[in-house]
Length: 126
Image (tube, rainbow, N blue to C red; front, side):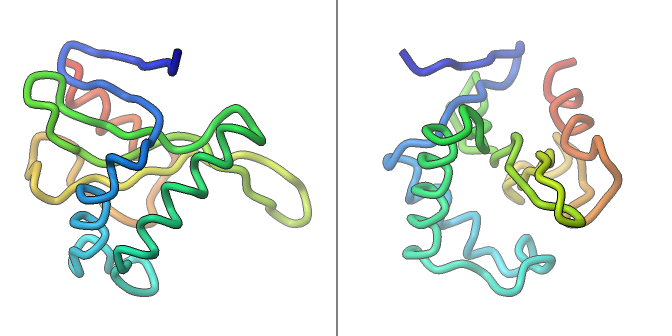
């Protein structure tokens, strides 16, 4: 059974191929993707899902889908990803929030202080 985490307003779960349309729509948003090199194509969105599926297998963690518990709306993703910093393997907290949710979560996007996504989750769970 795939694990999930629920707050009063959010469900966090692993990616599946059924998330492709929602993820591709979010990654096509030029404003949201301004901190990335470019908005992502549907093929790049599929590769993102496959990357995360591989992370679950190889590391036991990866980015998880955030969805509204009340509406099942795709809210974005968040979680740990493996990184190498100054030659040292480590993990980094990362996430992307769907712009369609407006001000219900953190409005900060892109590079920011540690805990940026934690404040987003707190905004949804209170």
